[in-house]
Image 1 (cartoon, rainbow, N blue to C red):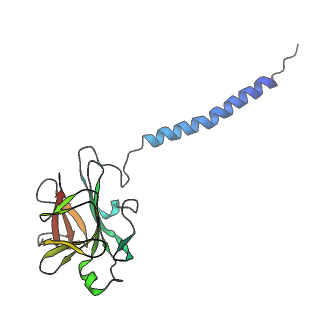
Image 2: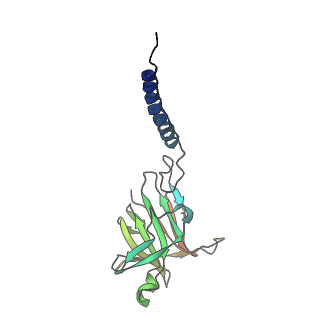
Image 3: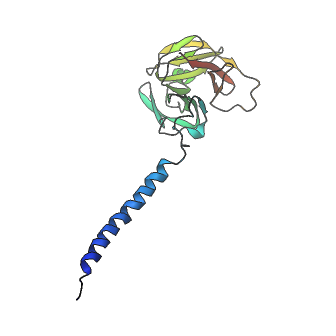
Length: 194
């Protein structure tokens, strides 16, 4: 008596083919799920706020070109900084190439500020949004809306003790939960409004 094993062979091969496709997909899904989250834009460790350096700020969270007063300008991604709060909100700033603007605007508009939280800067409240900012003469820091209208000016400070001033950076402030936005040696302190 002769048995026809071709039927079993076909069924086994079909089942094997399904597993051969399914198994690599499961392994890939498992390995991706358990990769450490080290990419920029990932939430900080629970309960911690993280100061972001330029290398950690990507076009995913800060635009490479920004709109201000009727035109766009390139952001200097190498000159950015910010804070990533524990609840996944951001405050980000970056210098811009303001060469296409009038002299009056160029004097005030040095950086682009994006904030997802209400901030206090020098006693003034700043709602979430996008703003043009800059350090101007007489030790002042100006915040402007996107139409280049001054929203407020506050006193800025100069840090002669800073060892290596860079074009723009964010550092920890004098009090917990406070931060300093620096352009060179000039800075203003800010913090979230609770």
